[in-house]
Each structure stands twice: as C-alpha cells, then as structure tokens.
Length: 450
Image (cartoon, rainbow, N blue to C red; front, side):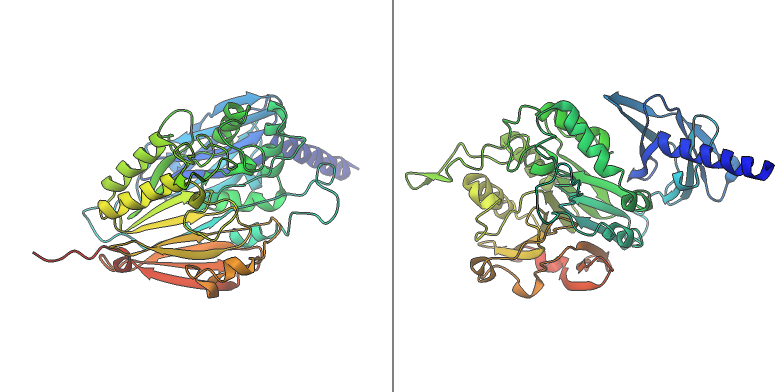
C-alpha cells in the first residue's frame, strides 16, 4: 500500500509539473558570449534556470527570467551572459523552486571566435515555413489543412546550428484575429504541440513572419491589431534587437555568413493596390517601405560575408508568380536590384517561404551574376501544385521543385575564397528530395583588372 501511495504521489507531482510548464525550453540565439532560453509557463509559476560549462560543473550558475504576462500566458526569457566562446554548456529549468523536469533540460555550444585566428568553421542550418496545426473546432470543414507534424521529430535529429523560421509559423484563424486574446491563444496553442518540444531545444531558433502569423490572409499595415501581434511575435521568439521600432526586421551573423531578417507586413500596402497606373509602376505600392529598404542597403554595403542571405516571408524574384511576390511591388524590387548592381554587392541569396512548395528561381543581373530566390515551404500546411504557367517559367530551376511537405537543410563548407552553400530539400523522414550547390565565386561581379 505504501508503494502504491508513493507511485500516486509521483504521478501527481509529474502532472503538476506538466501543467506549470506549457512549452519549451526553446533555445534562442547563441552568440560568442551570450545565449537565450525561452519557455511558457502557467501564470504565477516560478521558473528558474541553472546552467554550467559541461567541463566545469563547479561553475554552475542560477538565473531568474525576464517574465511577461498577458491574459493567461506567462513568457519567461533567460538571458545568459559572460559565457566563453566555443564552449559546451548544459542547462536545467527549475519549476517552483523544487522540481527539475527531465524534459526541461538541454545543452548548447557558443559560437567559436575564429576571426583573425583561423578560417571560419563549416556549419549547417535548417529553414522552413508554413507550419499549420489542425484544430477541428476552428478549422474549415473538410480535409484537415495541416499535415504530419512528425516532421519536427526528424528535424530534431539534424546536427544543425539553428533553425530559421520563414513565416506562417502559426496560422491565425477567424476565431483569433478579431481580438487581442485570440492572437495570444493561437501562438501558445501551436507552440505547445508535443512533436515540437524536442526540436525547440535541439538548436537555436530565429524567425520572421508572413501574413498568417501576422494577421489575416494577405494582411498589411492596416491590420488594426498590428501592435498586439508584434508583441506576440516578440514574446514567442528571442530574435536579436530589432533595427527600428514599429517593425521586426533585424540581422545576425553565424560564422562567416550574414543574415538579414526582413519584415514584409508591418509597412506593406495592400496587395490589391494596382501594380501600375497608366502603364507606369505604382509609386505608392510598397512591401518594405523606404526606411527598411534603406536599412537593408546599408547593411549590404557593410557586410563582407561570402553569402549575404536576405530572409523574407514573401518570395522576391519569380515573375510568373501571380500570388504573393515582390514582383508586384515593382518600384521597390527595381530599386533593390538596381542597388545591388550599382554597388556591385556580391553573394546575395534570398530565402523565402509562403508558397506551400519549395523551388529555386533566378534572375540575371544586367552586368552581374544570377540572383537566386530559394522558396522553402511548406512544413505542415497543405502542399501546392504549380500551375503550368509557373512550371514553364524559364527562370525556374524546374528539376529542383518539391510539391510535398519538406524542410531545407543548408550546409556552408569550404576554404576561404571558395566557400560553398549547399541545400537539401528533405521530407518528413529526412530523405533528400532535391539538392543544389553554389560556390561563392558564382555570386560575384566580374571586375576588369586595371
């Protein structure tokens, strides 16, 4: 009988722990000397973090979070500082000052201080977009729109440095985007799915958004809850400091590659505004807006990375895309491409999402190299089959298209001046569906020797 009572007590304690910790831990950006860890817990919970170098347990430290409470959601973010570069660390969440759940522990390695010392290390990262989680009570009738979420179990097996979420990371429904509370509910519910938890702590996570995790379908700057949805985004991710208030755009570097995370919603005019008026591009139709575009220009000028990766929820280059693409924001696209050409910016690659299929399209700069737009989609949302018109797009690498749920693995390899970027579109079992490779020297302007 005593044994039965003891087992019952253990079960009750375990149940209490699970009810306190809703989702996480999730590993945020990991830098040379800092890292961030995120979790969501039941309001009123006391969550603390212990962390230590794996080679020096005696250096264990305890940390309290920055907590944020909105409605019935408590977000706890831990900012780990004074770390050592290139060092393995372990961590453990502590719930209500007494319990250490086994599933609330993890490990990470800080970035290596390689500059001016030795060549940049090789690394890999993952990317994807369009993660729809079914909820029968609020979904449309008929076949569920969301697919097999076990894809995240496979992604958790990848030995990658980080995951780059390319928008539509959750999907607001009609029951969500009519209130502030609904926005928080959807983000919390989708983040808490069991198949996602091992992946959240396996590697660092960065994110941008697109229409469905911003507001309504094809939404823009007029969304009345835009300030609230930005708060949701800020709390459910641990992105670096935003470049300017009012948006979510920012940047980060990993080893020798620079990433520019764009905001394609906060400053966007309506998609239904005409592309042109009287045969001339419409000067009022914007996706990024002047301030964000100027920021990107200056960032590109400053970067010396062999690959300058611009991440955007909306595709950039596909001129045969009748849906959501920067080609319909004519002047802004022209300005960006002309700037890259005028300033001879080498190494630019676009990573985008949205389309529910993966593809690679390209555009030849007039006096330069091919720009590539790599669409990474979809993780779990219903796949899209390309129209005959798009299949016949001469700028599409037709043999690289994927029309099923998938994620992308990128590998950055090679010696200095010969770095390569390889991508693999992978299915939910980790099988490579398509692959592609580009050398940094293929992404350069040819300058005449004087």
